[in-house]
Amino acid sequence: MQMSMIFAGGLVAGIDEVGRGPLFGDVVTAAVILDPNKPIAGLADSKKLSESRRERLYEQICVDAISYAIASASVAEIDELNILNATMLAMQRAIAALHIKPDYVMVDGNRCPQLNIPCEAVVGGDAKVEAISAASILAKVSRDRAMKTWALIYPGYGLEQHKGYPTVSHLQALRALGPTPLHRRSFAPVKKLLSDTLS
Image 1 (cartoon, helix red, strand yellow):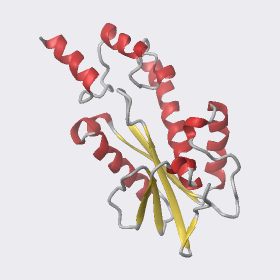
Image 2 (cartoon, rainbow, N blue to C red; image 1 turned 120 degrees about the vertical axis):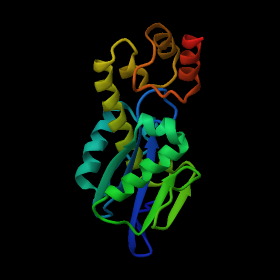
Image 3 (cartoon, rainbow, N blue to C red; image 1 turned 180 degrees about the horizontal axis):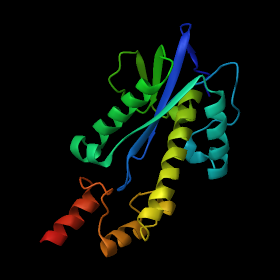
Image 4 (cartoon, rainbow, N blue to C red; image 1 turned 30 degrees about the horizontal axis):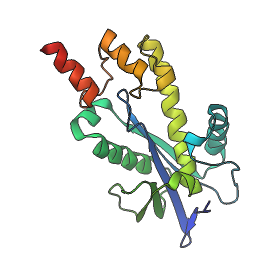
């Protein structure tokens, strides 16, 4: 894994998102500037870590990072802008919320948000760049915690288990209970359900 925290004598922020695929809830992004003097062992793509490991790393990142920020785009923004543009908006918000402005930004994926800072897209960056790995962990833990809270408000959908993704059990619950206000109406399974209900 690259130690991509310093670039041309300046600070590098890693950024990643969680929640592009679910039918429910916000898309969440995080931006992290790691401290090269406080290395964090075990950083990796959040999807490859256990929940307990992610939770421990989340706390350590929050303590040891030079700066970090977590941001989101709402379901309404996703439905209005589409998921790609809403994700880019959430990334812009995360960078803007950093209390220290980075000199360079590295983003997981193949597309950068529009920023007034030099930016590089890194395919598979959450497994290659430590700052992006850290961002993926903050975003994943934040969104998973939110899903557990929403599961208490909207019981019966299994949000605490599938985190809003279109699993068989989630689709069955949608058909039985109908969509909540936080289901993405622009996404095909929800749109079809609403269309079938109206027809």
